[in-house]
Length: 634
Ligand SMILES: Cc1cc2nc3c(=O)[nH]c(=O)nc-3n(C[C@H](O)[C@H](O)[C@H](O)COP(=O)(O)OP(=O)(O)OC[C@H]3O[C@@H](n4cnc5c(N)ncnc54)[C@H](O)[C@@H]3O)c2cc1C
Image (cartoon, rainbow, N blue to C red; front, side, top):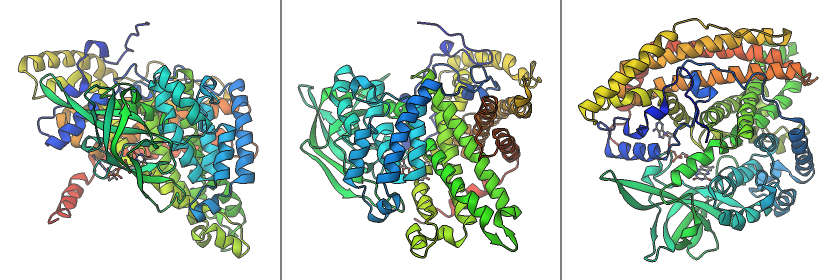
């Protein structure tokens, strides 16, 4: 195995091998908070190596391997194009998304067509009956689906991004893969069941449990899962359940285990099909498990490793939703451009009025940015299937779902009353049946499921703080013996004495533009490099100021997460614009990539500066006090 040196400015993670969950001071937390934190901390993958994004928070802006932007290879693109063409034909000729929305059902013939194409096994290796396409091509498929029908996107995404295929590809035994992958690749629908009535964002409160039989050959599963997408149609589901606790270091540790469960086994029941504001044809249900005997060989990874399975699955699984958001945003732009050019009010096309022009420009630039971020993260997975892109994927998920919501909302606003009217009603009175009303309903869920925006900000902040926790949290942890804390403090002081002064120095070698194409992007990239050092300083100052209590400063942490995400967006956008321009791949009917990138960076820089200002000037405490007064007497 190759031993990697920690990069300069990064703490030597191997020399601080204490598990980071033991470094967080949980002594002042409630029992519930402590249990939740310990469980998720234990399930975290520890960082294998620093990535471009994790380094940003430590003041390093290292574009090695990213400039030039890793564009899809011609061979991989061709492979994807062949599938996308077939899928597009099926969507255009066989799928009526407004009818699916109206009836709340996906016709069986559509599901069959998709299965015939191989759309249920896009990333599954041909060895197990799948198409074996790359992550980038899978994201391109999600983009196409997202532009067309939210219900089909959710069906295929819940099936293969979080359902059985992805965790099985990552963690399945050869026997499990041979048994289940060909089935799900052929079109047997799968699902993922984690959420319960009292276990939403916080899985520690889960009640579903599985007890081993005396001979250890089976686990007997009991419990109820809520909002299981595809659950009402699935043949096979990944179910998360508590298994008997283990005693580790004298403490009782809750265990969560992932099981592959077949829905025709005795005791599995769908008790309710849930219906929502949008995604009317989601096959989402309440699933009940009553003394279901699950063979022990159906455990994924190992007993007690269920949360790790879930978190690692989402490491790349989380890229599907932002990709679908890219498709949705592009479609909104396609619908809105001609409308803004042709709709005349007050003597001019509405796109000539500055208030509408501003929305249109942001729609275009932010769509380009979210596509660049998603493709960059996908390229990292294609380069290394086990790449640690959890930060990149979380940023893509948080940023793209929030931007897509704004984009759909703006598209509705630009269409005025027509944006609020259903496609069927528009069609009935002879107007273009633009489905913006459906898009708005369907996309509202995106900032809630697969990790809500609030949880994503905490997740990003946790990962951003990880190198600091490894260096200094032991020194601040009041639960540890004094001698251990003193040793840790000396080590931390040594690290920070070397690291901190460098954050104030200007870059020794600022990026240079190598051609006319890069001259417009280079100053934005140099801004991002400077700002990453400023971000690292601000993060460090916040740690010194708040100590272990920083963990509770959610709004402050959220701003760090937002600044980091904007810096990632600036980098991805500039690098992709350079590469597209250099390769002459800009499209004739779109603005020039360099114009999009330049405008995006200008707006992103303004958002970043505002977030920095808010680190010191904000109304957080007053708002918190006011909110608490609203919570009394219930
Ligand atoms: C249409 C749909 C499909 C779904 N599909 C699936 C599926 O296939 N499988 C599955 O297992 N689940 C699924 N879910 C569940 C989904 O993932 C959860 O809704 C989500 O995890 C949030 O949980 P919750 O709704 O209980 O909200 P809660 O956890 O109760 O949160 C409520 C609000 O509080 C915020 N919040 C919670 N904790 C914190 C905190 N510590 N700090 C700050 N803010 C916080 C949340 O962000 C949210 O805004 C689905 C849900 C829906 C609606």
